[in-house]
Length: 126
Image 1 (tube, rainbow, N blue to C red):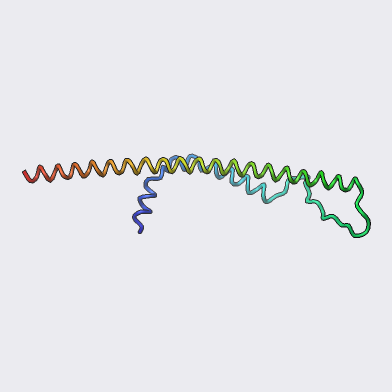
Image 2: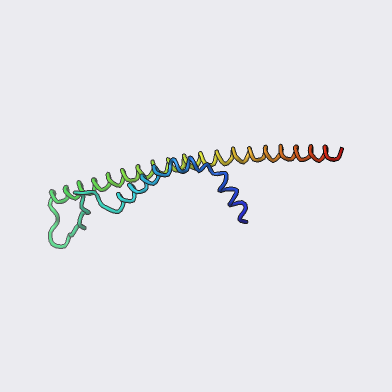
């Protein structure tokens, strides 16, 4: 069972993986930092308390502005996550293509080795 894993590890183009790893890591770190810390100046709006008196039009307008800013921030974060995901998908597609190419080359090499082995046996039998 360990042999397929070893074969899989050998056919991965590690040069490409290593080349793109810092970009993916930086994008992931930026995304995690953005998720952990709220943007400066953007406080989470307090829940609307309708206990005593109805809020004034100004208070409602301020809450609406704050809510809109939070929605915009979340939309920007979602766009960045989508871009990161697209980049990862593109890299994954390249890796799959490289593995497929190496698999085909391995089959050709095995066929050539088989032909050479048959040729050697034929020469030795003469």
